[in-house]
Length: 80
Image (cartoon, rainbow, N blue to C red):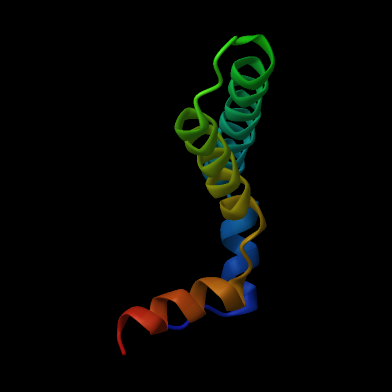
């Protein structure tokens, strides 16, 4: 599959995409808040829970900054 910069920009401008990005931003912030609460407020910190929250926050954030080239690269890597 080929993603051009033009089709990527059209997708970014789509209102549904904008809403999805708002949700991803909110989810990333919630995970960061959970990480902070668990690392700050708990007497016994669970490193697995912290890694879980950090990983989710990073995944949501990565989706927000993906560009056309990186998306196409991932798509083509699956077909090799």
